Each structure stands twice: as C-alpha cells, then as structure tokens.
Image (cartoon, rainbow, N blue to C red; front, side, top):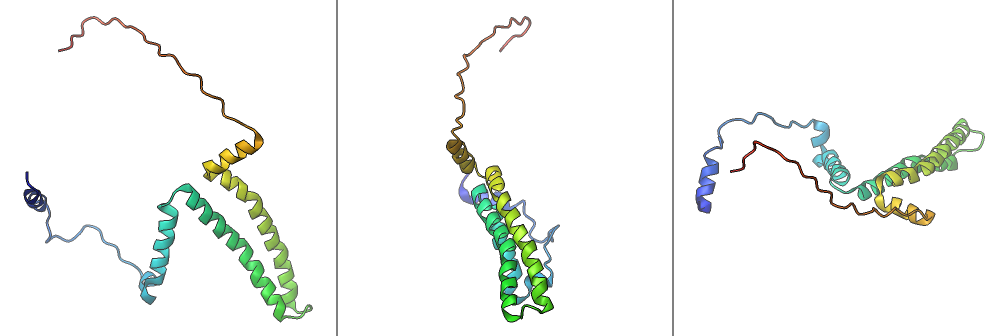
Length: 154
C-alpha cells in the first residue's frame, strides 16, 4: 500500500462533521490575564509528572524548604517596622517559634524523602556506611523431564 492510499484509508474512518463527545471548558480563573494561571499550572505539571524521580525530589525539597523558610523572612521583615512592645511584634515572636519548629521538622524529614525517592542517595548512604549488597550466587540450570503421553505435535 502506498503512503497516499494509507492516508485515504484512515481518513475514511474519520467523521469530521460530528461533534466531539468530550471537551474541556476552562473557568475564567484559568483563562484570564493572558492565561497566567493555566500556563503556571502546565509548567508545574510538566515538571512534576514528566520528569524522573530525581527532578521530582529536587522540586519537592525546594518547595517544602520555601514553604517553611518564607514565613520566617516575612516575620523578620514585619518586626523591623514595629517596636518591641507592639502586639504585632509580640505575636510575630510566637510565630517565629512555630515556624522555626516547622523548619526543624522539615530538615529532619528531608533525608527520609531522599532515601525513598533517590536510588543514588540510597547507594551513597550504603557506601558511606560500608554496607554492600551480597553478590547473587549463580543458579545452575535445572532441567526436568516430564513424560507426557497422548500429545501429538504437528
């Protein structure tokens, strides 16, 4: 079959006059302002779902680091503009304690996420701890003979 015949053949099965069964209707939230929200979503989706685990690990660790550290930066910035005795300054001191705890927990969990998501990280930890994988012993081929009567191969 020639190439032009294939095109004609596949085109015979397409009904270009029928309406599609499914369509995507985006809310104005995704389509307003030159589709910034949709473009951002597609970019993040491409990074997280189309890459290997190492890229996901880096994005995940960066994102969690940003989420835990950014509020501390904002709090310290707010404290610059208020006196020590202002209620906002006193409240921000309490928030510093909570977010510092959150940063500590995040730092403790990062190596655990690395172990689960990165085989290179696991191998490095094994090497540092002196743990080596046991070499697999070769398995000899064991053949068995079965006698079957009444089967005829043609």
